[in-house]
Each structure stands twice: as C-alpha cells, then as structure tokens.
Image 1 (cartoon, rainbow, N blue to C red):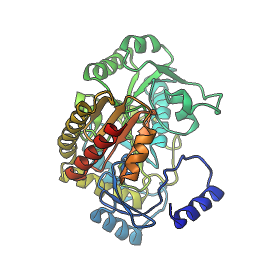
Image 2 (image 1 turned 45 degrees about the vertical axis):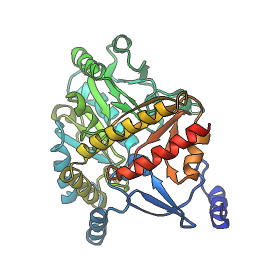
Image 3 (image 1 turned 90 degrees about the horizontal axis):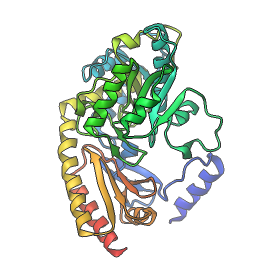
Image 4 (image 1 turned 135 degrees about the vertical axis):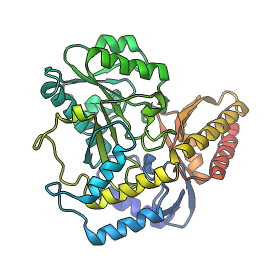
Length: 399
C-alpha cells in the first residue's frame, strides 16, 4: 500500500467510528463500472456501492439533473408541496400496483415506515389490534434498532439486547412453519424475494405465492422488502413481479437515486390510509434534489429497458459461472440469483479468494463467509463479466 493510502487509513482510524471492516482500498474517483484508487490503479466494480449505482458511476444524465436542481432548489422540508417529489411519486406508482408512496432516506427507514404503517393500518383501517411483524430466517431489513429486531440473523442483534418487541422470525422456505407463526397479534409478514445479505437466496415461485396466499387467508398484510432487489436488479422492475404478486406494502431504496440517499415505501390505497398528517414524517426524505435525481434514474431505467438487460445479462453471467464451477470441481457449491443479483457460494471460506480478486482488480463482496456477492451496474459490459469469470477460474484452480 502507498504512503498516501496508509496516511488516509490512519486518519480514518483516528476520526471515524469503527463500524466497518473496510476494504484495503481508497476510491479516488469512479466512472461507469470502473473505480480508481489514490494511486490511479483501475478496478472493475462488481458491487456498485452495494446495488446502489445501478446506472454506473457518474451517469451523465443524472449528473446534469443534480447540477441543475442544486442551482434551482435543494431543500425546503416536507411542509411544502414540491413538484419534483410529486413527479417522482407518479412515475414510481406507474411501475407497480401500489396507490401511494412515502419518501425517506434509506432502506432501513423505508422498512421502519412499512412496519409502522402495518401496525397503524391494522388498527385504524381494518379494526384489529394486531402489531407483530413476521420475518424470515436469513433476512436483513436494516440497522435501526427495530429493523435489527426484524432481521432474521442473530449476529446483527448481539450486544444490542433487549430487542424491541413485536417482531417474530419464521424459518425461511417453510410455509407450514409460517402458518403456525401467524396468530391474532400478527399485522404483517415481511419478506425479501431474494435475500441479499442472507447469501443471495431467491424464493421459489411456489413458496412466494404461498406466502401471499396465506397472508390473504389470514387477513394480515403481505409486505415485501425490495431495498436491494428492486429497480430492475433481478430482471423485472420489481422482484415481486416475477411471480405476479401484489404486496400490500413494499419498500425500496439503494438504486433509487443512483448514489444519493433515497428510500421509498409504497402501499395500496387502502393500507396507505393508515397514515394521516402527524403519524409519520421525515425532515429530508423526498427533497427536491434527491427526488429530481431519482425521477431521472427511473426514467432511464424504463427508457433503456434495464430490467430486460438485467434478465438477459444475468442469465448469461449465471451460465458462465456455472460453467466455471464445472471446470473447478469441488470448489463451488452453488451459483444462484435472479438477474444481476448473483451469489457464487464456495465450498470453503472465501476471504482469501475475495482478497485475491481485489488484488487482481475486481471489486465484489463476501457475505455469509462463503458467498461471493455480485451486484454490478445494470449497464456493465459483458466483457467485464467474462474477465471476472476467467480470473476467478484461475484462482479456484490454484486453491
């Protein structure tokens, strides 16, 4: 590492809370699917800020909108009507069956809003004193205290007990266990169509449809967390659309403004009535600057049919990685995913492989100790995926 990097690392260690296991890389600039470090070394970005810069870094149309909007209006708060926010809301609602949207700043906040709405709507709209939210093992819903309680992974709860009450976890993939978990206290069931932090685990169509059917039969809300899987990532605009699902409430964030902090919760018109003035709020959510950027992002995704590109390129990439697995017997347990949300599960702890990939100029993520998680920009070149597969093949053969 260069002295410039080591100096920055020392300053970071002295000034910033140690909440991240940082990668041994300082990014100086980025463009498209490329990153450059402080010394000018180039990397292929297969992580896109954890599924955030889905249009690639520095997309010129988005940059131009941000510049123009910053000169016009940045922030006035949600006490005022804002044309940028309304335009974004209308565009988002045109992509789904929801009737209303609430804007916030992150995925955790979107999920918090969804859970608050579920509790209040059950009481004020449906007349039931139900408050529990059921989630699934392996899930991840955010880092606020309530969303840590909702998350179905014990490691995220350690040291933060006691957890807020009102969240129950059922086994992933077991519809009978889920049915046994739902009771008169249940307000809703919150699921991810593809678990991201859980190791890129897609739901089977039959199971996803059974969950929705069970919610309808029991009169509880069917809720979907699309914070990572939404916005064309899986090959449909929303992941739940793969299975013709109609959630009562669903959430999104990461890719919404291509790098600016933005989240949204969408709900049916009936359930959205659970919120009235004063019941929920945010200072910054949906401000003019981020809303204008997000509106352009969604416009580009629709115009360029990036859901279709993610489906086509994701199918190609997964086939490429499965061929790689066959060429490296005993090294890869499974390749799975939907669209360009891909997990390569190794048969052994993957830290050294991940680090070697970084050394070779490929940025990806390692989750669940063994899963290489790929979340590239939806605009990435096929050649970059080919080069990654070739490099990973060589590394696996050397193990």
